[in-house]
Image 1 (tube, rainbow, N blue to C red):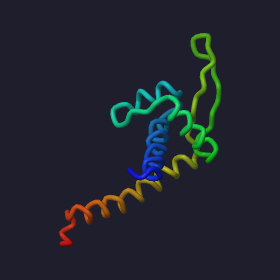
Image 2: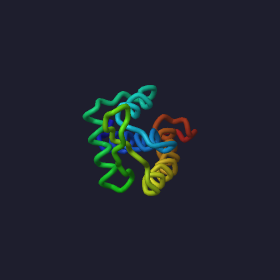
Image 3: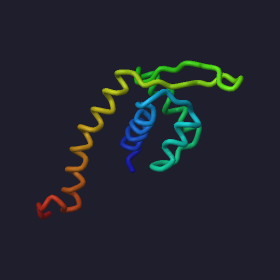
Amino acid sequence: MDIQLKRGLLDVCVLAAIKNGDSYGYRIIKDLKPCIELSESTLYTILKRLESAGQLTVYTAEHEGRLRKYYSITQEGLRRIREFLEEWKEIISIYRFVTGEDGISQ
C-alpha cells in the first residue's frame, strides 16, 4: 500500500478512536485492534503528528496514582474525519473502476 495513503488512513483511524471521548495510548491501541494493529511507537508518532496539526490536544491527569496522557479531538480533527468520508467516496469510485465493478469495460 502506498505509504502516504496508509499514513492518512492511520491518522483518521486514530481520530475516529478518540472522537467519542478522550482516550489514552493503550486504550486507543485496544480500540483499534479489531481493524488494524498498531505498535506503541507507531501510535505515538501518529499522536504527535495529529497534535502538531491541531487535530488533537493532550493533557495529563492522574489515574490510580499515576499520571496518564489523555488525547482529545479538536474541531480540526473532526473536520479531518468529515473530509476523509468525502474523499472515501472518490476512493470507492476509483476502486470500482479498477476492478470493473462500475460496469465500464476496460
